[in-house]
Length: 269
Image (cartoon, rainbow, N blue to C red; front, side, top):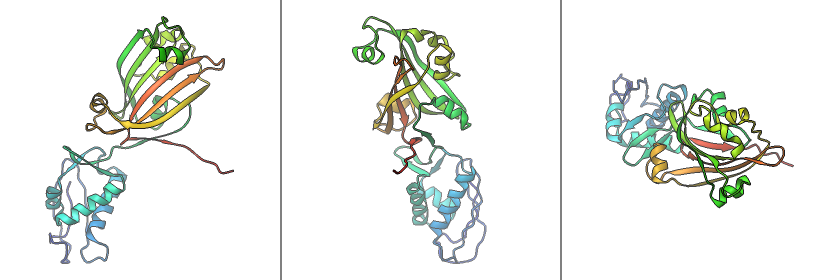
């Protein structure tokens, strides 16, 4: 990052002289006015926020520690600390133990409706892809058999995929399908959405019961989703039925809380 800042590191004397600095691989021009009534930390935070908004600072990149940042910005450490904290409070930066200060990844926000995550990401130009972790026929547990209304000895499809958005891990998707939708297991689920594959196999989604929750991620979930250990996760369980009332899917999904949220529109009566 190249910055243009006042030459006085104590943040008090006027005279705006360009001072060059570099942080990581991002480049940016910032002009701070020490004679302004607006505190320097707020000036710095606002100009960084605008740079994040227009894409001059790449989301997900690390900024480094406060001491190095203060040297690069040409300001005092307290000024840098307050600027960073302001951006943390606004949800644009995050401090991660063992990693440092990092720009928050672009978040995914989805309305609460019966839609495909793959389709929603594609519609928002987030380049969805999947890594298939599990694709198998299994004898269902009593819980799965009850959800899908199948016999205890009747094999069902189990799928587990790591969903990526713009090359970054976003969610772990586990789905169970009844035997009549077994052709879905032959689809190219790395590049095709599950619901598209279900439609091709004759599965028609009509209504679903969905439960949203939150919990601490397991070690494996945090590893796959590139989150620090014990990071918060958004969870979702969904039981989907077709017009006849027969179940066509039971889903258990885990999302990165740092990058994912559900939205719902409320109307007053």
